[in-house]
Length: 532
Image 1 (cartoon, rainbow, N blue to C red):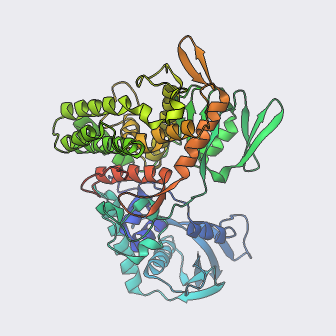
Image 2 (cartoon, rainbow, N blue to C red):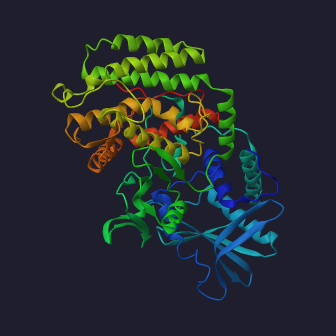
Image 3 (cartoon, rainbow, N blue to C red):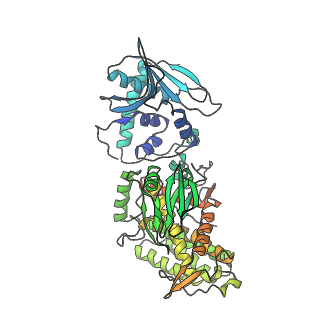
């Protein structure tokens, strides 16, 4: 990552570097997170972040500062003028019952703030930390050594963000478990083995919201997404509970809602009523820009190991899904043989040929996933893509689009380009990397959802229309399928690699970050998901 020398470094980034170099790297490349700690800190700063309010004429809040020679910039939470000079106050949130400890990172931050004020021509009379949780003030006496440490920390931080490779995560550090960025850093997962600590999702209750009512009009009002049709309000969803928005067919979104979702970094995916993904709307500022450049180079050069792992996991999961329905299925042994051959394949042609052979065997037995009493109602001939010639293929087409959308969202969240892939070609302008990532999830998520809705009677064979040989889902069928898919994505499993509980949607995001880790040099290899 190349940083021009003239660009100032935020003081907050230096403080993050003191806590953990990798966390500073993640901040520098634009990774954003939401956590209880960050929310507490933001709430605690709600008063001092207001420019127009101050306790008295000698007090100031949210003051921008800089140091020209050191190349740092920042903002004072609060400052008070006295006869001896400026007293700096920094507000810090601490977890309940934690001691009011002034850490090294806090001292560095105060030293940098004081150095900035001195460089701007002001005398500094004192510095202090106000611990919001305890409502107590602690005076901090800075020494010359603190200023030397601060300057050294600035230089080390600049060297870090100018480096070409991401720093390695901390090794078995207790700091990881109280770090707001642990869910995207995944420090223990980089070894691609079982981990001791479960990584918590920042917003586990947030879900993808689907708009599938033709002719509906949607806009934002009072922090909610409101859905209307024919003058009647159909739904009102709090914006802070939306992880992603997926629009199916002819639904109108107001420009205000689109803008609000972009401000909140919530992606919007646009699909046709028949289930084809047309595109997505995201902010122009995303994380990991340099890694994205490296991704395009790697995509052009090719990464055989990545492509092979996607397909090995896919074939393995297909065989497991068939085995769950019938242990005596005649193609199971053949699929296991293909999986072994893939492990030793060193040519693109061999990998693609074995993938095609495995897919043909799997879909020749797809009828075995349907309960015998349902087979007469749900006929299966072969896997045929758009237009779907029968209801089962129509269900698969739509569910694969839902899965593709989740893979696009996961890749966008970590700053990767969904179009620059390693297995699928980008020549046809398809989201190649998203298609790569979804390969290992087709059987355990998409195919499993279709199997469930058919066998449980959630959808009926009569819930489709036939238009000149093209089978399409009726509205009730589409909504039932979306509901079943969302239930599946929210289902927690024991992660096959790391051993802790995680939802399927979180598992998809973890795999996207494993791809990122392989590309930025944090990991030596990539390992696909293999269900049991």
